[in-house]
Image (cartoon, rainbow, N blue to C red; front, side, top):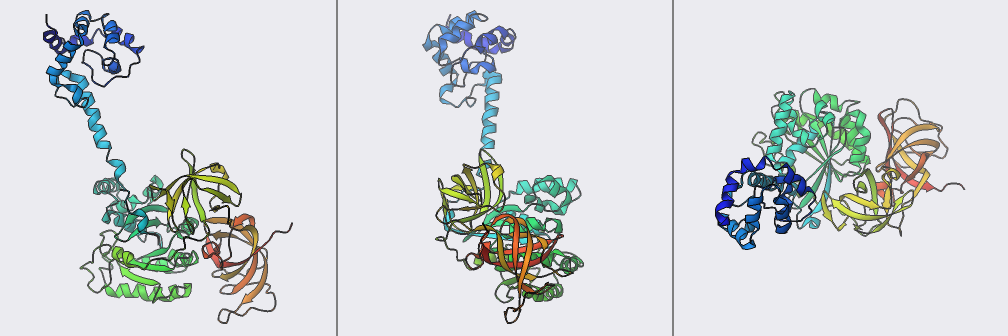
Length: 563
């Protein structure tokens, strides 16, 4: 009897065959044969590996429960091949993809598997690694402003407009937000990723995302607006080149944000201290019923802000640019809006693209202040490269502890590269150091040119807000680049006249609000710092106490430790 006739019979009786197959299964478990996926369906799915390459072994075991089929299938290799060929040459087709309908359960499962794989494949390709990545200038933009001004919503809207978040994802967020009766919050969920931030609608950590325009590559740093999280906001602002101050135009919200104790003032000042040179003021929520794109309200906000921003140190003509927008509807972010014919400038994203390039020296000493660290197949650190260039397999020193480390891999905005230039936000995987040995505020340097570290330094300080007087012995928290450390003012050296810059001859016994003085400060532990003259990014600092920013200052000179 020809084997061609019987094989299909036994396949049609698949249900009858599969019941007594437990013995066969146990006999197969001992086998370890690497074989192609395809198996005739009288062999249970779990043992797919054992038919194919090593036909003879399989036959020997099959004789136990299915002597007829086994002998016939094993008579000659040719006959098996013919049977398969008749069925549609599955060898040439991908497993599960052949036209073999009788192959019941196996075919379907394999097909399902293939389908799943096909569906999962495109997911990681979401941020496409652009071939010309290094050519675009990297710009870090920090969104600052009072709590609930709409910073995260604008960030989410920008990511949607530039195609960094899929429509499908946003629709999912919208459904979830509706269930919580928070339907206006869904855009901010693109940046507020953890559950606590979403439930309360408040950003806590500095959110990170990125988008590209024709000329530039932007990293969004979404800073928290709540006053309890100002230290996180300072960390975010210290990485930024450009700040976007988001103001809510809604009646009552602008006023609370701007009055004493509101975060609008404090954030603008901290951004200036952190070294942000250019400020864009986005007057948000212009679509609100209380505002309704009114030019009068826009001008009112502008008039109140300009004198204050001028006092902080921004030049209204050069450094500040005002524009109206609506984060929720996306009006005037990418395309000009018909709702405000009175605004003639560029919308937000084109305006960012048209800004002049930042001049950064790539030949300077390597300095990378660490913002955050975690474990992931080794030690991973995050930070913005302030100056110099960094490349894979480079040997670096982690200051102030002088650990020698090696760069295993470099990611610039989630895209792996071999080298990176100044201004880029990087993730480095390091070898030779444990995650516990690193703290935010440590600095990666090249061995030939280490940064300075110490505990005592002289600085020029401007007292911004403090009710009583400040005397030697006063303690505060120092924020310098990404480092946070407790300091004590050990001595006041002299007062500086604000207008003339003259220094007083005698030592002051105290300083009070709005005065400028030169003082000696001593940190509780060793910190990395540079003088403002040598390296501005690491020579500026703020002093905070009781949740308020008390003073801003710059490092004038490092005092060596007494032996």
